Length: 197
Image (cartoon, rainbow, N blue to C red; front, side, top):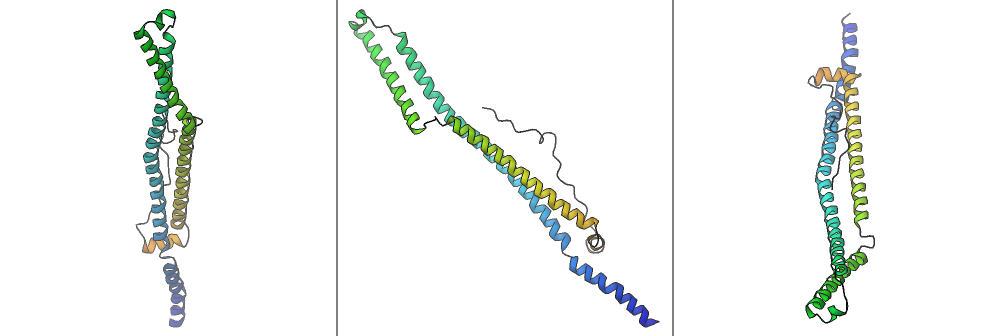
């Protein structure tokens, strides 16, 4: 009778011990994986927080440079067009100097515009805005991928805690392990980011 009892106890305890030892590290590994995936989500949020203001400032810088060039050309052209040249002006040195100065101002503004056109054939503002749009989309996609990875890691962790043998192992050796909440977007996060220039 004692032999049968010992065999039954060993038949129960040995597999249980094997099960615990073979699955002992699953919960800590999965927990660390969840933490790592959440860190990646935070990393992407930080990237967005760092990237977007810099991109907006860069594009604004280009737009302001080009805007100032266009304003300068428009103002210089306006000054030239306001001046009326007639026979009397040719004999008036002060009026002639004003005309020459206005033309020189327009020439300088046009030269500046031509340099911009040579350096930036499309005046680059359009390309910069497209680059900003692409970076915004890329950043949002990175956040989406990081969130997806986090949700998957939480799912694997929760499955380990809610299915056998993980549930048994958790109850015996990791009693503090709790099912984790998955990612939930707040109403603010559900809104698309708004970029204003």
